[in-house]
Each structure stands twice: as C-alpha cells, then as structure tokens.
Amino acid sequence: MLITALLFLLSAAAIYAACEYFVNSIEWLGHKLKLGETATGTVLAAFGTALPESAVTFVAVMMGRTAEVRDIGVGAAMGGPLVLATIAYAVVGIALWSCRRRLGRATMHVQVKSARLARDQGWFLSIFIVKCALGLAAFAFKPWLGVLFLLAYALYVWRELKDEGDAADHEELEPLKFQPRASTPSMLAVSLQATLSLLVIAMASHFFVLQLQGIGLALHLAPHLVALVLSPVATELPETMNALIWVRQGKERLALANISGAMMIQATVPSALAIFATPWLFDAPLVVSGVLTMLAIVYLWGLFKRGRVDGRALVPAGLLYLVFAFYVAHSLM
Image (tube, rainbow, N blue to C red):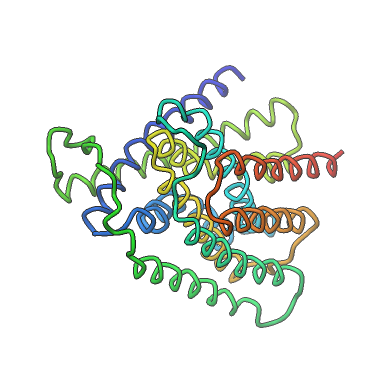
C-alpha cells in the first residue's frame, strides 16, 4: 500500500511537470502556426491531452474481447465530459481565487471572450444531447451514425481554425524550456518538446490510473465505484493540470479553451468509436452522468452568455460531480 501511494504521488507529480513543458511548447506551436490563443487551446492543446484518453477508448471498444471490457470504453466516453464540465471548470474558478493577489487582479472577472465560449457550450450541448438520445434506443443502423460525430468534430476544428479574430492576442511568451536562451525557438525544438512532454503525460497518466485502482482495491472500494467515479477524474487530469498552470500564469483564456476543446473531442471521437463497436445502450449510471453533464453545460452556457463571468461562479459546477459520486456510491450499497 505504501509503495502504491508513493507511485500515485510520483505519477501525479510527473503529470504536472510534463504539463508545464507541454503548455509552454503548445503556446509556441500556436504562435508559429499563427493561431490565436483560443484556437491554440481548443485545437492544439485539447487534441494533445485528449489523445491518451481516446486511445484508451479505442483499445477498449475495438480490441476488447468481452462486453465488459468494451463497456469500459462507453463509460470513458461519458465520464470524460462529465469531469471536464464540472471539476475542470471548478478548478479554474478556485485557481483564479487563490492566485488573484499574485496576478494583481482587482476583481475575479474571467478574462475571456465570453460569447465564443458560450457558443462552444451550445455546440457541445447539441452534440451531447444527440449522443445521449442514441444511448436510449436500439436500432440496426446506429453504428453508421458514428460517422456523424467524426464529421461534427472536423467541422468544429475547421470553424476554430477559420475564426482567427484573436490571432494577434498572444501575450508575451515565456522562453521555450528546451531553448531557454533563444528569443524565437526553432520549430524542431518546439515540436520535440511538445511530443516528448505528451509521451510523459500519457505514460504517467497510465501509471496514475493503475495506482488509483490499486488504492481502491486496498481500501475495499467497489470496482464500479473506481471505474465510474475515480478513473474518469484520473484520465482527465492532464486537462485539469493544464488549466491550473495557465490560470497561475494569468492565461485563463487558454485554460478555458483547452477544457472546451477537450470536451468537444470527448463528445465526438471516443463516442464515435464506441458507437461503431458496441450497442451504445445506457444503464442507469450512464443516464445520470449524461443528465448531470447537460445540467453543468446549461449552467456554464448561461454564465458565459451573460458576458462578464466571476471566477467564483465556476466553482458550483464541481458540485454536480459530487452528486454523481454520491449516486454511484449509494447505488452500490
């Protein structure tokens, strides 16, 4: 148990350290590709950090030999968006509050383009409603509908890259960690740092999940409780870490864009894979997770739609994940 706890802490520390390198390189990559901060977060950063979780879903649903293993992929496709819509946004709010003095902020207002984030929430909610509706009915041609989710993500990426209204909004970038003395690092160094840091994030996340499962067994927690409640938190840790790092740097626009983009990936790509390879039928916990995710998105959409958002208003979204954890724990008693 002691070794498991030590590996748990070491893997979490490795994820955080690797995320420091990743966000540093991804900002430079967006700058070199002439992308705005929002597109850098929603496309580049989100794609990189969501890749490990999507790979987990792919292995589970495409290579799983039993229905139980393939169901893990379905759970991941539903659990990821719930964690991002609740815990990740709450972390941003808490980080803004705790860092307000160091950042010299007179108010707790989130410095983002609220209208664009509100649009992203509406886009996500529309796709997520369709995704959940498919989980409530069985019909023969359902697997073919997975293609629509891939097309939806392609359209989202195209729209984000096309909307370059904030392309000149990059704040002064910190030196690239692989070339700290260069005022403008090479594309090779930027790409190498991004790739290596992403590999470390993927490996450390894998070990983190394994240690979390080991701790769950040692504490005699029900396997379903670990799989439905704790594992999604672990798999979405890179996005949450990225958000924490960017908020500490006063770059909440990148933090929220990363979360928003990761949510869009989780709502489309893993779902498409699961729809291709499984019946995609929801049990009660998955239905509850879907409903709570939609409630969180409606709440966030309302906040951003009104315009100026107080960072503290993001924190209540995290309570919905506690509701889900309580429901799962109670249902297993």
